[in-house]
Length: 354
Image (spheres, rainbow, N blue to C red):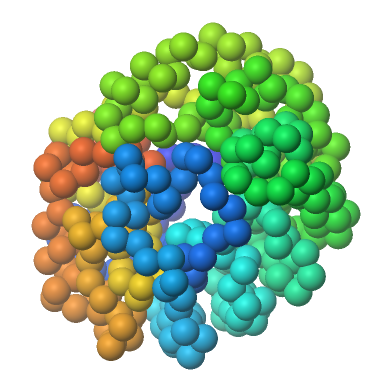
């Protein structure tokens, strides 16, 4: 089975690496667009909706990217040569009504398209769009039955069964769009990871990626939380791996979180590869700093994304961000940044001695 996740994908983009060496701005490879901040779920751990996590401190749940502005962004993305767009939250992206048309226009313009979703609306026209044009759909879940799903997300009992039905129907289309699951591991579900994988595999899911829930802005506090369940989680993941075959795999991203909070480096090279456009029409450094003042690159409410991205204002912010001071929080790009910075630091005279 081809590898879907890797910290080394950046190696394919030599022009971006060279741009970093000379502090030149090039179009991002990948953009996350958060089309709306309304969500039909209320997950207990959602960083955009709980007060004890830094992410989303400035979020306005009423914000939505206007249809005309979205298509302006889409046209800019295509013209700039951006390679991929992922729709995510914020809120639940599949509730955004123009999304099927947006997905089609991006795909027909040569941009690969994907989405992160709770899967409740993975049906109808939006499911058709991703089946026809999407590269992947990744459903976020944390449960193994209707009761656990309803409790963790403050929704009615029965929606987990509906989710499994949505995924079964989507996988039955036999499209090229990969259907995956991001499973958030916590102290409640840690003894049921295998049970969940059995259900998800039967629903036609291609893979399940396990990640630890983030419960604090402190890496040490997160590790303390997970230290109490780590042995159980490890056993459950290994048991789940016995389900693997040519159509299904288990990906283990359950790891210590502390190192992803403290950074020793003074620049964030991954900003040149991935950026975020929020429903408030602000451009953010990354998903870990979306809807925060410190993560704001600038606004595109009254200017095009393309104009903003190549502006001197953005260039100064991109190359001025100091993660050791501004990013003392969870960072999904930490390992990628370390790898890029290690590569850029190699002495060219000695780099030939491979």
